[in-house]
Image 1 (tube, rainbow, N blue to C red):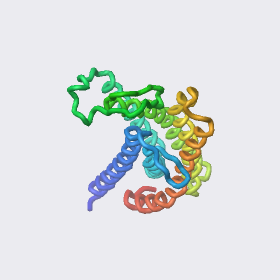
Image 2 (image 1 turned 180 degrees about the horizontal axis):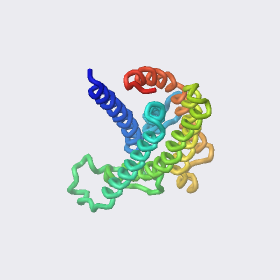
Image 3 (image 1 turned 45 degrees about the vertical axis):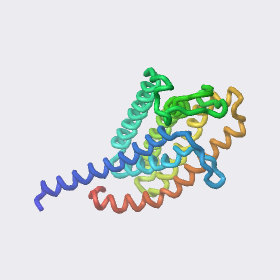
Image 4 (image 1 turned 60 degrees about the vertical axis):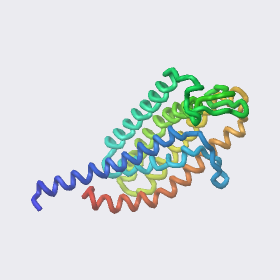
Length: 248
């Protein structure tokens, strides 16, 4: 194989792997925004919003991109994710602003009959006949804004801390920079997303301080465990991908 052909193969591999990691990153983040807090699940002692389940994967992806491609590429991926967050909010808002057809003319599955009045995290009160889209918008729009604010703080924090620890340890101890950067940034994310999402409900008396703390604690405990577990796939991926990509 000639030198130019070999260089093209390695370059193509690197772009393909980056695209794959960025795809998982953006897909996990988008799932958080779309399904958000539409359902809470019980996972052992933890009460979690179903949208949180794929979210720890985003930190694994940023750590892999940071390790294999450097800080600039990692920050670029995070910035693209921020643009996607804004795009999701824009589409949700446009869908909510556009005038709907009358409830009588809508397909039956698009109109829900609520058995009782409900309050959403955004502070809206719903009763009677409600559009399915409006119900989804009312329960997710506040969570999307919260996740965007938490995303800005946590993801850039993760990338910065990862390279801080890498520089401090002179590139040694992969487990240390992986865990220390992720555990700190996950704490920032958990605190911000719960505070912003349920802040209005808490101030209105719909949630007690204890319930808020349980939500924060459950959220962070899940991400804490996921951060420790993802050290294993991180080592495996770094080991094989550095060979595959011929990356030092």
